[in-house]
Amino acid sequence: MNILVTGASGFLGSALIPRLLEKGHKVYCLSRHPPEAKENLIPLTGDILKYCLGLEEIPADIEAVQHLAGLHNLGEDKDGSIWATNVTGTRNVIDFCLKHKIPHLYFT
Image 1 (cartoon, one colour):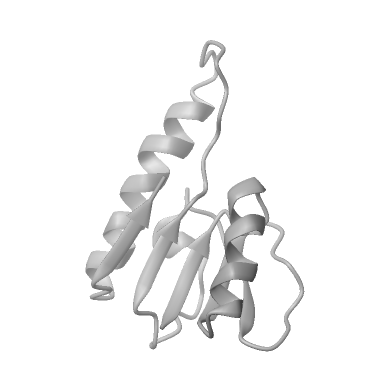
Image 2: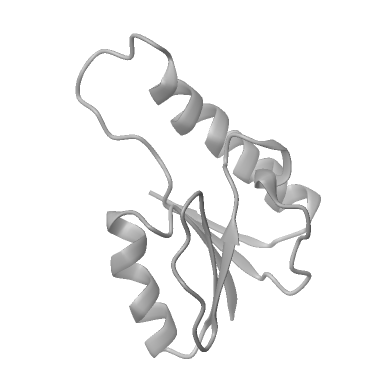
């Protein structure tokens, strides 16, 4: 399966991606700071806060999205960044999946 992973350079992404690769999946890694390319791992520089996740070109073969990007803070959201990332960012990922007819979305 061809899977787009948001938050690829984060804690969850860095744990999930090796397992997906071990199982033979092709993984598109979306991050503001994506990992380096290797076999079946394609880095994509993007941002869930932007339209179409900030991607200029959309890979046509994406079959699923693992949405792991988010801010985790138990404190007060004084500047609205937690809301923007976790709510608006997730809405952008959902819109991306709908627009590109990606049938599977998994999120944490």
